[in-house]
Length: 285
Image (cartoon, rainbow, N blue to C red; front, side, top):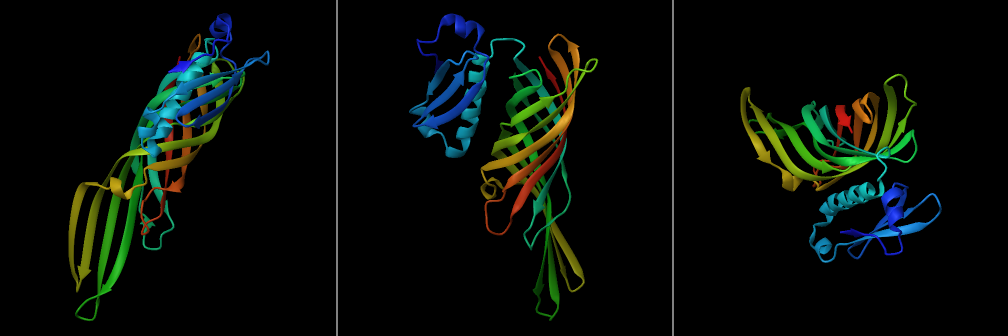
């Protein structure tokens, strides 16, 4: 639970807490958020999480930290023109990029992501944009293996997998906006998105060609969560347009490219990065 030190005047809390937060850290189960007012005064919010924090799996602490950051910024952003909340949905095409010699990319998967948006405007044209997303990643991979058979020929094994990976992600981005032109405001958005894998499934098809005879077998919905890294980190680049509906309510439409930095597979046989291209539609209040 966030608490303000007694030295912070109540009138400051009520009127001026929208000024920038400039540092976040975690130390021994306590989250510290330092912030400064325009006047130069500096204060600190402390969220004591011990002993709960210690019991949370390391890869899932990122979700808790993001929720605390969002809640704390909301407390600071009492001015209605400074903070905006919203909802979004994003149909996407996801694919896997691999450098493994035994695997090749074999197509993309259609997905659908959704989430909550929060924007903190620190000037009229610049904002810190974050939120919580449920993102669907994945793609299709193919591998071919040759093996000598007893007749002196080769048996050819072909394996195809369509992977569906689901993550909870917290985008951390800088949003740069133009001045409003009519009812339209154009924006560019860049940042990173840490995420935790919550689900991993695969549809598999295996084909064997041996002495001119082809046999195949397939299985859908295979649980591959143990073969997927729990944590992912990706880069976000996007842009779009906002249309003012009324007051501070805006309709948002944009395109976002998400490029994975980390290997999604947890093993030595496969190395692959997850990417997707999404059309984002949302509304900010």
